[in-house]
Picture 1: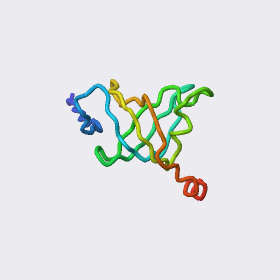
Picture 2: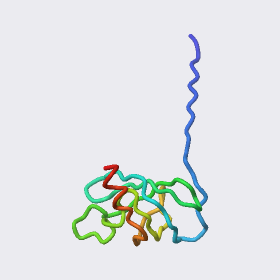
Picture 3: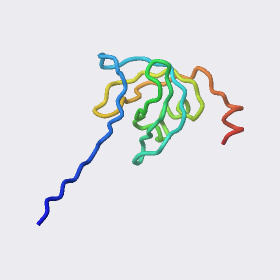
Picture 4: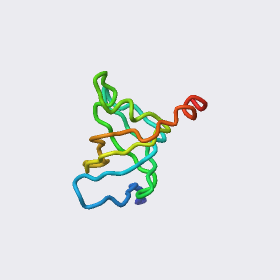
Length: 106
């Protein structure tokens, strides 16, 4: 009888978040993935934290005010709140939409 040893390595992507419950950041939306019925995961690029993922709750609802601001290649000003695992987008405002770029690439 031999003893088997299994070694597992878990990598947790972390980024420096301010100590505040919420903070504002400017970002470019790189991509989005639908999650559940109404939510959307976003991959963002910011100058302060670099590449990060955030959750936009209710962004896929018809009545969502955030939906139009969170399209790929859009430069946005975001209000993020500290979530359990990921930051949660509470407000979004478009700075520059880069519509010609999005139309060429999509």
